[in-house]
Length: 573
Image (cartoon, rainbow, N blue to C red):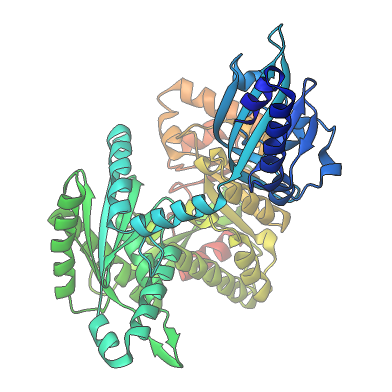
């Protein structure tokens, strides 16, 4: 408007021009919009009071300054080179962002230009309107439409939208997702006996606990009343939803305090899984609802979950049974350690021993490691088992000192899952220090995959252990993507050549050559080599030249504590 008026000024009579100038000045001075006028060199030559009000820039701060000072990284209008935005046109308008004195400001901007006979910009006028209040209003409307007003988490509408996106991703990546329907227990009783304020408090606390138990990629939604939904996308396998449910119930086990009264939140969770149990919100919710009512029928705990698929539920019950039995085994001292000697190939003396975990169940007898290790790792109980192993070894060290057993080191396997916690090394070192056991008597055996993982926790913990004096042995070397190159970056103290190579070396010269090659390279890096699974004298003869230590039935099977002590005494006679 202003530019069109200015363009016509030259064609008007003197009186008309004066009237137009008065209108222009009146608009310029009193409009609440910001007005900015720039010259042919793209310098700011005039601003109105509305500009100062909007940006907090005084006229003196901007006059004759480059217009580019008004730009932010998110500006859609190019103040530095207006032609980029105008593209030879005379007018531009749109939503953009303006740089103010103290903040960036969302605005609606209309910009018009006057051009000379050559088509170059001779003057540019911009009228700029603050749209922060409109944006806040739109955000509030969006919030009310998509979010639950009490808990501020997504409602059914936004849940449906996110599920649609998650289903597309799961289909493309051929992954699973779980829809978990949570119904709180005794919520009506809380409302009726403690009041609606207590009910609202419980709903907010439930939301807080759900956020603590779920991943950032998960969506927590409230359907209404005391019903919540957890959408868990990108699961490797359907049973991964079980871990989320367990974390939720762990958070529920911690009471909340309302007006000095403890309240324990509990609930039932039904789990439906894509693609097996449906591919739409309605179908997955319907099946999760059926599973949730099955969970409510369980009476062994106030917190229960149930899979819609019977096969998954059966797997879950099996895992839960094993987990409960592991907890019981730790309480009742059903675990024990056996020790298998590691022999110096040249002196034939015992240099250290590997500690091996055994589980002797009173009802089921010996439980093989492969039947419970993966479940212990997935559930997190492996941490307690690992602590028990280290503590027991330190107690055995103290016992051996009392009976004058020669000073030995002990190696033990630690699960990869344990190294994923940020401070696992501190706990292990503390146990050794509390028992006054020198750290150089411990060797931690880790799988070679741990060295190849780009996980900062893993590597930081291994380095911290080594700095504290604990030795690291790379277990089952040769079975995966073994690389001596990686040992230069993350050095180990020992490598243990897997038994499969030892068993084949008498029939295959290539295996013998490979073992010798590994040994030579390892020794050049000052890494000691242990051959595992040695069972025959012929194997030992082929290893003598390049390996340092050997372990296997040729020397001894794994021994009970008392048998191991007798073996050590006998071997030193």
